[in-house]
Length: 158
Picture 1 (cartoon, rainbow, N blue to C red):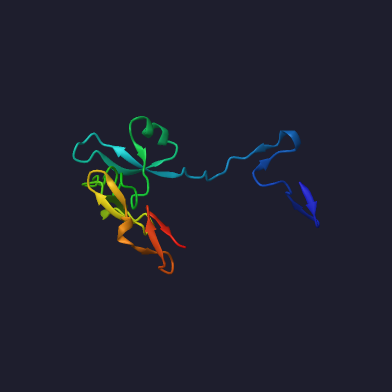
Picture 2: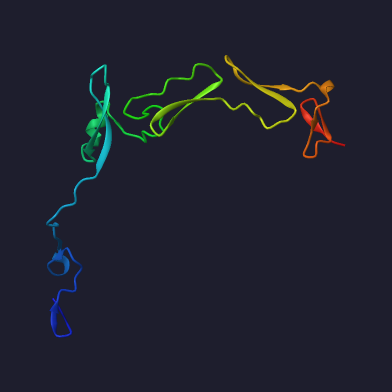
């Protein structure tokens, strides 16, 4: 024990007991609690195949071995939208997209705009986005000031 300012003060870092090479770490009197992990637990029930449980990070490996999986963000994951295993249905056709917003499945039209003013953008339900060239004979004005003309799918300015 070191003496500082006339008072006996233990100058060693906390948690070390003993002198020199024989110093040993002291076990804390209040061990830290293990971290908790959200897990989608396989139930074996066809009606509710998974349910959310919270487990110790120490038991996580065992849960993963038998089909459980770590719970993801259930507010935006289309495979766990609003709860474990609650998937958003695939879109009805190639012109729709599905997403999970705040735990709710949403369907929206696919944005087929290719940013080219010399194409006509549309969506085919079977194949998805279609970008057809504007016919040269249509003389479609283009460009920032509108002085260009669409030719072969590109804006031509002189």
